[in-house]
Image 1 (tube, one colour):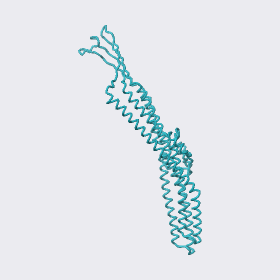
Image 2 (image 1 turned 90 degrees about the vertical axis):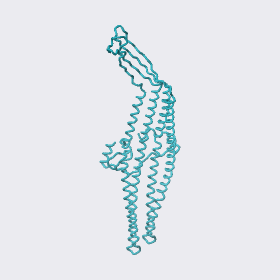
Image 3 (image 1 turned 45 degrees about the horizontal axis):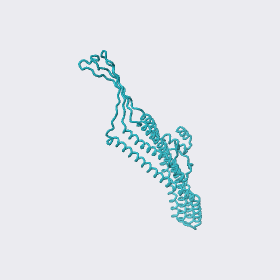
Image 4 (image 1 turned 135 degrees about the horizontal axis):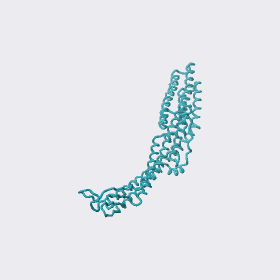
Length: 405
């Protein structure tokens, strides 16, 4: 994908939002670190479910100190032994299951952070598009202001207007030029954010077209889908892992069992060889200082994880409802501005300009009418931008399993 992007850039083709999202998901180092964390936990889930390594014992027993001879007397022997410890019943299986829950949590975290990265990219992308269109809008207004300057000059040359009107019209036009310079600086800033997200050495050239984002769902559907949000699923898996930790801690009430077998080679003439077999048990006889504390600590951790899940769930619901209400309001405001306010403002400006050219209106009215056009045009762009930002956030909040992977 990165090679395709470099090739497209060399050919002058602007970058599209879907292409940028694919680059971000493949090049972001934070997501790469999470992928390695998942691999680590997957290996660990296999390891923790295995028995401890057996112990091999080599030794010499009952050697006489006066000669260290192996055949001087009976019971002097070389020994070899093997022992295996078996953890308390069920502990290994519980630890393996707990780690597998942590793997699921890490996978959901990766998907959630991928969705967050896409949201961050979309925000910078939409801000850049707004600034690009705002520059075009202000440039158009600058051309309209030039018509006001020309009208003021015509009246001044015919002795029907004043020099002050000409200067004020020129001042308004030059202020628009300053606004364009400020917007151009903002465009560079947002493009720099996009380059940072995509890990690119230079500012990209992006497609100057509002992207088609997924249509928002109804509020009831969105709230139902919220339970499948990756970050919330990750918190659920962490809660399950913490609850599994209680069972792991309770397994410590049962003793660990070590089974050992040994063979001794006796070198004294006529003496037999020896075989030893034994069982060793740990004795959890002081549970109030160890096992009880471990269980209480595990319960506290599980309760903490549950509180974290509940808090995150409530926060996401509040964010979803607020964003949905904002989207509904912005949709109405954008339609009203686009269909009524901006066309009326334009008609009012041209009518006032025509009246000023014939001496039936003051320059103040012309400048005020032009500001109304500019304000309405920029407000329409802001509503369009904010509406798209709300759609992007709603898409993030209702991210389903497998999305942005």
